Length: 398
Image 1 (tube, rainbow, N blue to C red):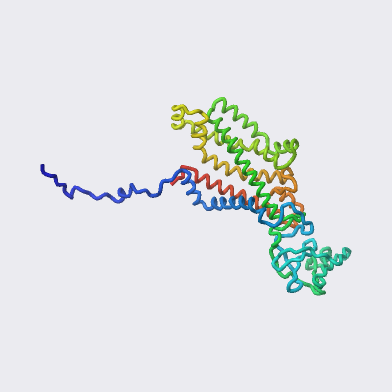
Image 2: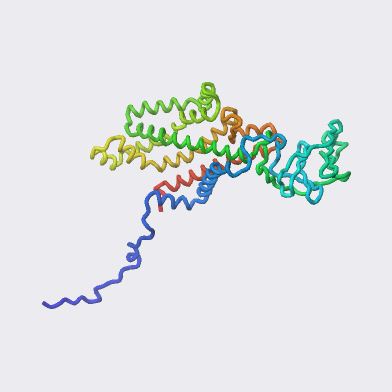
């Protein structure tokens, strides 16, 4: 039998687009790997995530690193600002004059040493005299009460060194108290770090409550539906109608105000929003084919809900938790601000803001520091929540 010869003319070159059709353009990824890849492309979300990690590490390690305690009072060093204008006496001697007309011995770099005791205090003429390393320093603050026509330049005080007026030598940062001190001489940095611990605890409580109560409650309501869903959602409506502030006030009357009453109040009512979200997700997912297949092979309702429905709804659940955490942190700060939160000497960002109101005009930094901490934390969680929403949405996969 003769062999059949196939002519070369019968062959045709494959087009380049068909040749490259089978090439894998990127490695195969799971759903969560792809979500992490997309999240890393969102710069604001990564900034928020890094700030949250930084805050967690600071709250855990910070109290062991800084040299001051959050509750230790140094009344002689009260209301010291983060930056100071220092005056020079000689080459090695400097002092800082407080807005309350008190003098403090400081170094050239801004390290507080001690309060300088006056040798003469003439309150009638508003004049104080100090002896600093053999030099006479006179503080004349009588200008502050003079009339405008007698003090056209608006001078508040004059400092005289050995009879000659001196001006500020330099403005330095406070190396002893980086964020300054409060009205009782407590370190603001230590108290802000401790306030971060309170906020992280509230965030942890909100996360656990939303996950274990809200997810399970909403999952059961959405899966069984019918009369069960109707009754469970009416309970949610009743709980949702009563304001959180009323819960906290009632708990404060029963068990006293403090962090414990806030945690119980959040644990009682903060899961209702998550329950609604999970219920909606489960209502749409329970009609899918894989749920019918699980029922066919005899899987129990609890197994279907825990192993199939809730894992497939984890995207919206995680996004919702990331969005609800800053709301819980702000709620705690607000309750502490109005006096229903943690009690002294415990420090919370809300209590720090409340304590700063009395001296807002004279010491605005005492309000700015906790306010900035609250704002940055809420922005960080919101940025992360926005990034998670985009990263976990399968419709945006590329």
